[in-house]
Length: 98
Image (cartoon, rainbow, N blue to C red):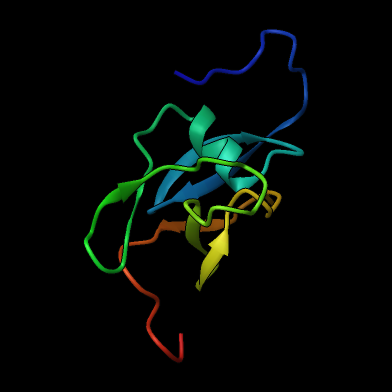
């Protein structure tokens, strides 16, 4: 559904999503990189386990929560990617002390 423009010539970099290498572009947010990767990326809500995808892409809806470099509840739509970044799709609530 989402794909990059053929005119997007920004340098690429590699991030890791659930341990799998994914190509991102310099300047992408985590959520944009995940959507552009073509993977069926979704988080599960804490209460019902309902699958969610990024929605507003501006930090209002919190549907893009991911764990980034070991820190949970990060809004992927607000965090720019960095080479080697470790991202985990968040399943349920964040455990206290992590």
